[in-house]
Image 1: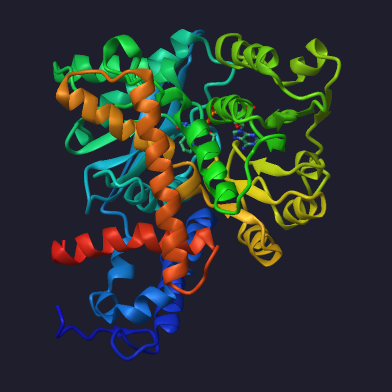
Image 2 (image 1 turned 60 degrees about the vertical axis):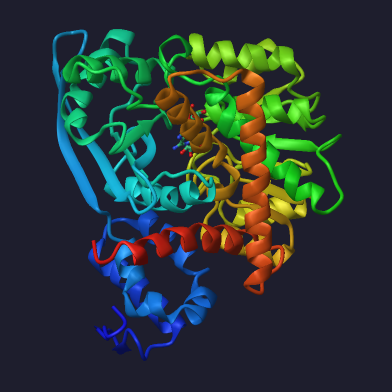
Length: 470
Ligand code: NDP
């Protein structure tokens, strides 16, 4: 490989500066994947941190490692026909992006949401590669899903759709090949239907999906893991400054899996959550969302599948603010608070929201959702010097606990709740330490974004170098 010197843009891969090399790779990604703005954004965010690494490791440049890492190993796209309750035929599109398997089988969630497209899944799969590397577990990166909208569908419709989806997906996945999990719109119900269909088609009971039910191979703490892990990561960032979550007012967005367990762990650690939201609007409860109110939200969202507006009808201390599409900011991020836990979706915090957070005294942002902050918003956090825990580090507890579910499946045993929680907590402490130390080592102390990107990248890059041109 050392003799390789390939022409790239203005120079060659050997003579070009690290900065020009990174720019040329980003330009290439934009040119090759024109209608995928989220994928461009994720590429910029990760590659933007890597210039000091490439300065120290010219061999990555010579091996065109960045061009290889931004190209999925495999993209699968397929038709998902199914019949609704009226007997009408519906057709959705299914995807699986198998991004990188340098350090383990592809691993990452499935998302069912009408906004799903190739670019969104490629951004998620790309981020997943570095996140999984940070967990210290042997997992490659992937992501998949469909533009199917589970909202308003009956259980039978969801079952028919997921069975059709798995009827194609099953031939591409397996416990040593690719192990999907949940994400937006894919929770316990959907994983159950997906697993049932996989088992039927393969005639095999294996750990091919994570997030399974407790009675059939699932792990304790997996539903809690992303939210708990995000709060553990936030607590570590505060601890490094001699601070804690005790008494801190916290903004949480979304009201799904990640949001619910973020609220629960914030309460455990003595903080006061005051907001939640869904795609219809937000609630602000200055009295605090306590355990009784959280139990109401869990029943509302997980069993009754209702809207967050009902919270304000039930609890009169709260006010409900519906989404106003004319606003260029989200009022949820304009509430006075100490900490923010974006836990809904990508790009839910723009530059104006970030400026509002800083203005209102928020000194910590820990990302439960994937890429919830735009690049401009991130710049505002970093310029303001607030503690910023980027998604690939802060929300890695979910996939880490999926990794623990895979281990338990392979060993055919189940760990206790305390044991899994302790392992999750230790993993989050280790991820925080890795990001903190790596940021310092590469000359940007306190910059967890650089720490996470560089820390996640190095392990994957070295594995790719070892494994040759594949
Ligand atoms: P859920 O489907 O359980 O909940 C998603 C929540 O976000 C809902 O309240 C939903 O509202 C809201 N939301 C979703 N899309 C939008 C949108 N376009 N605009 C406004 N609100 C929206 O998903 P999760 O909690 O599992 O996932 C939330 C985030 O966390 C995602 O970014 C996901 O990728 C990330 N994540 C999840 C992990 C997991 O283990 N589940 C692991 C790591 C990251 P509504 O119901 O109205 O659509």
